[in-house]
Image 1 (spheres, rainbow, N blue to C red):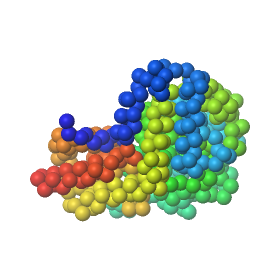
Image 2 (image 1 turned 45 degrees about the horizontal axis):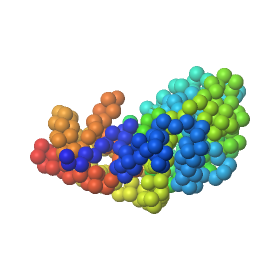
Image 3 (image 1 turned 135 degrees about the vertical axis):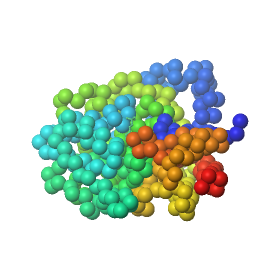
Image 4 (image 1 turned 30 degrees about the vertical axis):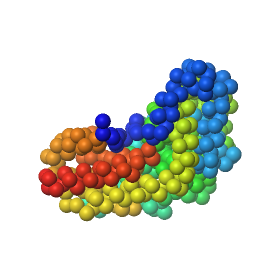
Length: 361
Ligand SMILES: *Cc1c(COP(=O)(O)O)cnc(C)c1O
């Protein structure tokens, strides 16, 4: 079988090397005669896996000891409720930056628990879509925290700047961008991400939170979403998704072996440039997002002749290029190229796009 490249937005491609390792030790982890999936999360063996994963993640993102890392369940959507329940005291409101679908979902959920000020930063100029720079965000003086989404997975639009507002708590939904580029974690008070895009298999959510914020929670917060409780129990208040945790740990080791986030960021830059260059140089494909706000993880594009969409997808599939269909709410195409996507996969896609344009354009 020829190589298949998986451009799915999530659950997404995992590094081949990691899958091979997991396969090799699936039934017999560390000469234990058992699978990782079969051992207690409280066993010495699993605790070793858990601690190592945490340490590797700390190293990769340079996370200081003043931050806790929580490994929990419920996905990013779970955090849409957990954030306001843990952090708002209902006196002030929270600022929600609206940059697209996911940030709107977060905002909608938060409204159940606190008062929300929605700040729209989307701009449309002729056919050019952009986002306001942080300096133009209309932040309220008294807001309790600011929530934003640096990478809108569905629209392929991104905020590359790190928002810094004096004395404000900054919270980011990093689901589709975590570990893809260097960030200064101390610019944030809390970031969270579902694992299934750029970390590991679905089932786990990672929260990186300033320890100072752990005592804020609202009394109604369910214990399994309560940051303080999760932290006190070292993310083992209930049974954690052990296999996802283990596999994510393998991904962290793989990332370190690749040279860390700086190297990964360079590779991601090369990959996204290849695709955007192809789109911009053609009269057959388009992307109308401002160059400053183009996602480097989810590259969306349209065929000028939308009637060719189905044929494009079918032919791409025949060439081993899978799941390029854009989200149903957006249409068009989307190539998700997270860390695990090799440069070769992107080159194959570019080659196919040029071939398709030549043949049907
Ligand atoms: C996928 C995604 C979500 C939803 O994640 P779940 O784990 O399915 O809850 C939320 N935010 C962003 C930015 C996403 O990409």
